[in-house]
Image 1 (cartoon, rainbow, N blue to C red):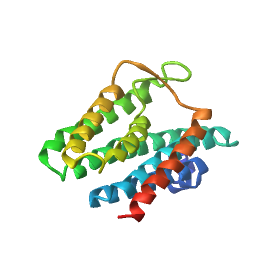
Image 2: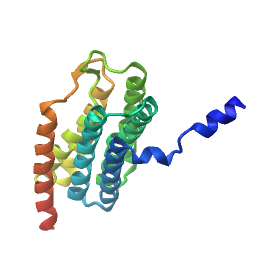
Image 3: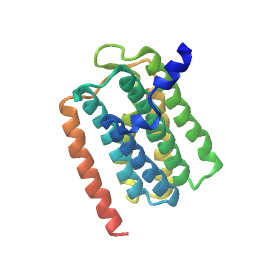
Image 4: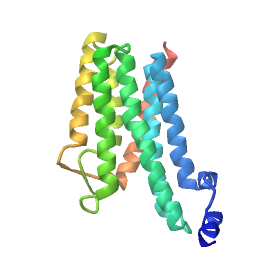
Length: 215
């Protein structure tokens, strides 16, 4: 009887979708889906815009969650799980698809894509269990940094040959994957860094938007 009452008292799954931080997280997921869609089509400037906005929403949901009053423990726990799962899609699966698509889905790029996803899963699993090393320090490089660096390096696409850039992209993602799971301490970027990211997102959007306009 007690178990039945407990089950009946549980909130529905979709009720959590109306929580403002989760709305922000899902907006980031939408940006990621857009990035994946355009990456598959080979329209990489559009993919980069989607990816950097996914980072922006990823940072924003945590700020909203910390400032929002009246959230209960279940809402906070659910939001943490949702954010972690979206991070896997945004900063592991999406970069892996970008790598595969740029490599024209050649089998040579498949191992690299696996490494990107596998290290992302390992890193987030570790973080979910152990959390921060200190109050504002991660163990390993946070996955969102991969996207921040990737959209910047992708500006070289078209500046150097496609072959050279495909090699550069492969090497870059392998280096980032190594740092994601390395036993090194990296700072958690917060505070004024959020405003720096806001400016960076705007600049990146303008640059890649200009490229799309001239395609």
